[in-house]
Image 1 (spheres, helix red, strand yellow):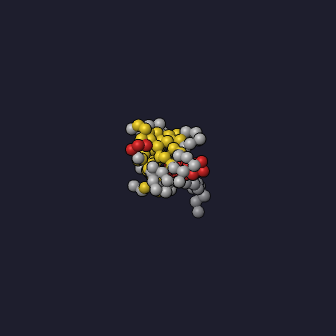
Image 2 (cartoon, helix red, strand yellow):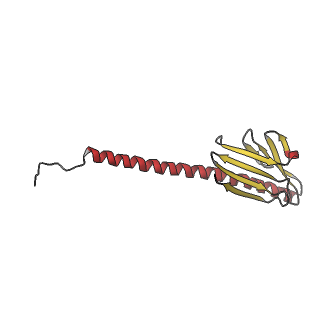
Length: 150
């Protein structure tokens, strides 16, 4: 055996290991970023649906109409007796509601009645290519939420 030869790694082996580590880190960070985006929009749509349900509940409990307001331009919504909620600038709202509930081209509302019914509507929360639809039934006032895959 030749004892003068040193043990260790060659430059090529070190470069190969570094490249593999860089690829692994890129894959993991991309996956984490995607799941973080997914969690943000899911939480925003869940909170919006909860405020719609709250508004319906208030109409039933108080025995009088309650109005849930949305402003597409400012990316915000408001339930009765609650503070205005603004979505992050990266998210966007969409609204489809009864014509008489539109207050401008960029804002409108969904009205809930004491019997639980509503004027109905459809609110969409967008973030990049992801979107969640929150549907409000006009007959029952029931609030449902679903993710739309693209």
